[in-house]
Length: 112
Length: 113
Image (cartoon, rainbow over all chains, first blue to last red; front, top):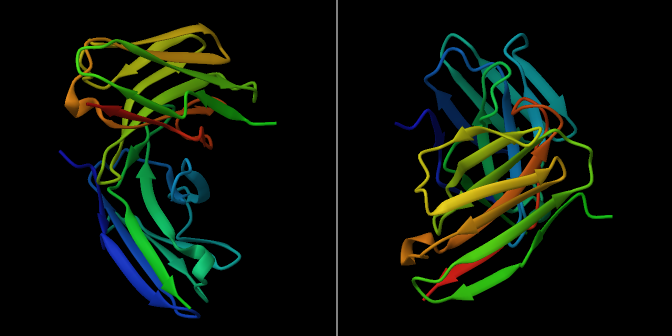
């Protein structure tokens, strides 16, 4: 049972374009939704996170949009740069749980 | 200073062998984790520990045995290695629980021949 579904699997964007990655979740008890970024040969690192009391959170070029009724959240990367090329994972957890459930990842390639 | 460190970085071994991976964090966090990342990059939690106590065991074969001698260390011992165990194993830590930022180690690439 895949609790967090992520799409697309891969994405190619031109430099300066907007990258959009989507995630959908099933468990309405989830209340923390982070995005992690992973470069080849490295461990994932937190990029940005949101809780369901807000519908949007922006940090620099990265924005999370959250739709509680649709049980969906998405990552938008504005003005995408070649240095943004990486694998992006959405994730979700609930309450004081000790488990973070990850989506399957999106390989983003930004062409120069 | 490295926040979360793992040793070794690479591990190549034969089927049936036993091996260990060590993890240390210097962030003062209470919670530590082991994840397995397969060849398709899918990141799956294996174990969560809080204050040296096992909290989550995500239906991992009992050939995998984690051990937390103290809050700063979480080691993973694997018995009777199988081909399907080949993956990258990541250790991570967070202040208290999964809703805090998780800091990942650099990973250990395990190859079972």
